[in-house]
Each structure stands twice: as C-alpha cells, then as structure tokens.
Image (cartoon, rainbow, N blue to C red; front, side):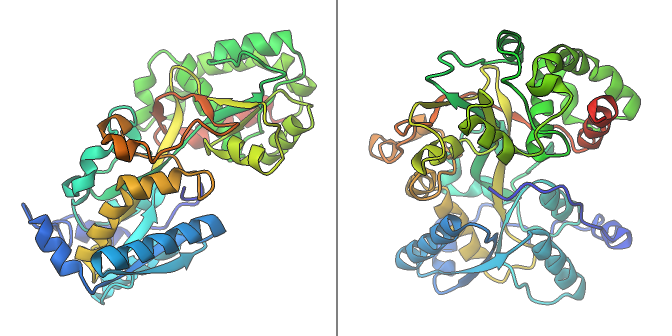
Amino acid sequence: MEKPRRMSIPTRRGFVQLLATLPFLGAARAGQDWDAVVAEARGQTVYFNAWAGSPQINAYIAWAGEELQERYGITLQHVKLADTAEAVRRVRDEVAAESPGSADLIWINGENFRVMKEERLLFGPFAEDLPNFTLVDTVGKPTTLVDFAEATDGLESPWGMAQLTFFADGAKLAEPPLSMPELLALARNTPGRVSYPAPPDFHGVTFLKQALGETMANRALLGAAISKADFLAAAEPLFDFLDQLHPHLWREGKQFPQSQAQVTQMVADGELLIGLTFTPNEPANLVANGTLPASTIAWQNRGGSIGNTHFVAIPANARAKAAAQVAANFLLSPAAQARKADLAVWGDPTVLDLTRLAAADRALFKGGEAPGAVSFPAPAIPEPHGSWVPLIEAAWLERYGA
C-alpha cells in the first residue's frame, strides 16, 4: 500500500480559488467507447509515479509493465518516488504553468488525494467507467469509494487494501479476542501480556481509532470534521475503556512499546500474546521468513476493523490518458489482482469481490492457505475524518503520555 504518512501538503489559496470556478481539467469523455480508448492507448507510454521502497512492489510493477506491453502495446515506465507528495507538487506546478504533464498515473490515497481533488488536478471521473470496476467489492469494502472520509467520485481507481489485523501464536492463544470487550477480558485474565504502540506511532493511533469506533455511541460521526469540544464528548467511552484496559497491560500501562515493530518482536519473543499490523498478510510473511512460528493465527475484529484502500489516479495534465485508463483497468483484472495478493509476490489484499468472478478467475486467488493468513476476515471500517487524528493523539498523550 502507499506508505502511511501524516505530512500535509501546502496549498496555494489563490490557485485553489481560481480552479474552484472551473470544471475538472481533462474530464473524461461521456459515454466514450472502451474499444476506442484501447486503440488510442496503443503505442503510448505511461509514466507511473509510485512509491519505490519495496523490491517486491517494484518487481510487481515491472511485471505489470511487461503484461501491458504484450497485451496492449503500452509502455509502463515506473517513476520511483520516495514520497507521493513529490508527484503532487510537480503536477501542481505543471498545471499552473500550463506545461505538459510528466505523470500519467499516480499511486495515491489519503491526504495526497484530497489535495489533488481539492485543487482540481485530476482527470475524470473515469474509474467507474473501467470495465473491471464492476468486479470491485464496493459493499464489503466501502473504502473503495471513500478515501479517508473523502468521496473518490470516480477520480481514482482502487488498487489494494490495508486493514487493522491482529495476530498471535495459536498454540498459546487458541481463541482470539474478536472485539475490544473480548480483548479487555483477555488482558484481565493474562495481566502484562497485552499492549499496543504508544501514539503518535501510526499503528498505536490506529488501535485507538478501532477502540473509538467500537465504543462510541454514534460511529457515523467519524466521517465528518469535529471540534475539540465535540470530540471530548464523543470519545468519553473510549477513555473509559482505556482506563479499564491499561492496568492489565504490559508494565501496567505505565509504559508502552514505541513501535509496531517492537510489539512484533515482543510477540516473537513470547513477552506479549498479541501483535497488530495494518498489512493483513504481514503475519503470513513473518511466518514464511521464520520470525513467527507456523502456529501463528491472524484475525480482524468481527464487527469490522479500520481499513483503507490505496488507489491509482490520472493527473489532469497527463499526456497518455487513454493508456493510463487501460493500465488502471488492467491493475483491476483478476489476473493482476491475484498476482498482487500472492504472498510470494507482494501479498497485497484484493479490492475485488471474489463472488463476482468466474470460477477460473476465482481459483487464481490462494488466500487463506498459508500459515499466518487471516482466519477471521471482517469488513473494513472507513478511516475517520482527518480532524479526529490530532485530537486522539493529543488527548491520549495528555492522559497517558506521562
């Protein structure tokens, strides 16, 4: 997935106000014929701006390029990024200068998407016109249509999933806790064997989002901006829960692990019973590399767990819009999604609804077969609006940070 990051991108107020008066730049042609798009795409080069921090992901993108060349005569050039914000800034500057685009497709989600949508830097809507979009699970995976509380509006095409997942050694924990109340009961029965990373660690904050969603009276509030006063009222059940949980945690909740990696190592060493990750296939990968035992189990809370989708989007000034659409459609194909989900290739969960696939396509997916694979999958709960996160962090640090 696109690496989680908390940085915000500065906007240019005057530029935004000007663009707000205009239609989306490069809007997709209404009712365009897909065969015509494919024909136009042949011979084009797609400059795919994508995070390049993983050899496995880089190899997968190279494979996709080979397939696009063979199937459609499209060249896919991976423009390797350290941070997606680099591409956002470049597109903004190019659009302002009315210069040709250097990016045709961007791997994107979260704040980067919100900024590009707000500043009208995206081509589209196009995603829901892609033939393979009919295979996307928009019901069980609502984050395929909502990106960190921002409606996608067809301006980005879903590519893969991330979701809060817990794991443990099944030889030590036969029945995993599938809710926060069950986790509290386990902590009481096994004092000192449960913990979570201290905020502002991304996984620690995600744990708090999960607990907030399971304890608050009206979870629908999470999708909208919130003030500090309203947050404190809405989050009161969360802090009641944490006050009950913390005395039973590792070091009685007076200290917390500093990172998800530390929690994982503590699970591997037997110091903690439960680990957590935002990459559902990470436990299986840890089993495969020998970090965790083959008896490892993984699960998501039965009522749903915090998750998000990562996407691909086409800049408004892209030079190869037709080929970019064909590439996005290919990345949604059962063949491409199954290869991406393969633990031996990448292990990134699919956005597709497998029940909609033909039997032969469904057979391409091998999920659940490897030790450490998720045994109890659950629906994804959309990320809360961004205004919740600094309030969660500040309130936690004020109450428990000392």
